[in-house]
Image 1: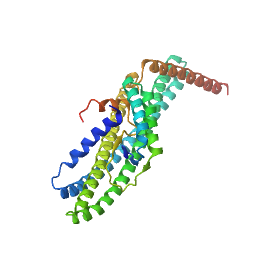
Image 2 (image 1 turned 135 degrees about the horizontal axis):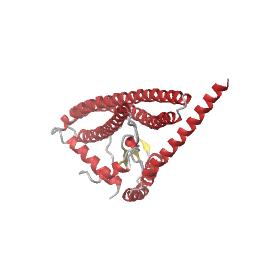
Image 3 (image 1 turned 120 degrees about the vertical axis):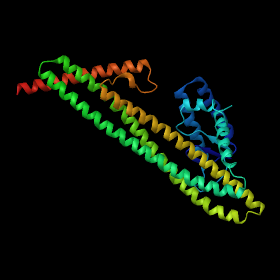
Image 4 (image 1 turned 180 degrees about the vertical axis):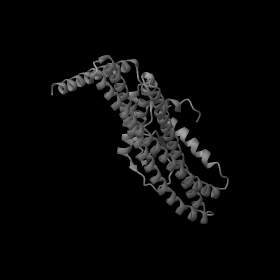
Length: 88
Length: 238
């Protein structure tokens, strides 16, 4: 499974990491809904840290499609909120 | 729906929009390559913009420091003339400028971080472009084989992802630089008019923080005043 952290790069992750990622994503959503900026940032950092520690970074010359796209490390609560109001 | 899946959906739609642009898959390769070169130029421009904005803010900080020194001098002169009220006024202005100047430090650091990120982006993109250029011609030459077609699809998607990612980061960086530039300009205008105050409270500031800052500024004014009195007193005793 390949996950891209926006503005950072792609990581190859074992499929087993997905369940944990989803759980952390749920917590992140929860903080977003609650409008809790500090909690949101802490969980965003934790989610990305998990990808970095569990995954292996793909070399810069890799040209592969990602299965998952994760927000950039400096995504703000406000920006995250806008993601849900704009059209995909 | 979670943030991850929302982000993935939005991002993938940007990628497929880019891929749909060309009909013949072989054209997609050339088109992608051109887009990549354009994107690299954009990253470099955005890097240059961030550097310019940072230099402007650094200059502004120098100007603020000059104004602060001026008010300090005025306060001293006023106190020597026995006008504590005027001295206090001058020190209040100086404290307000100090708060702005401290705020600029944060902006300078933020812009510097952005420059580093853009440099890293440009480096990564250059590597990808080189890899893609090498693969592109090989794949085109073998286009008739099914395997090459699959490979081409993969390379194009991978590349388009990179383009969409870099495009997004350039957009965010430009927005941020623009916001800081606008704020710096507003400070300049207000300083020129001599009405610099809470109009430029940092974004996200709540009333409590504002009050707290006022209190800190007030105590700074008192400290400065006492220090000046001591200095002048010491001078007189000599």
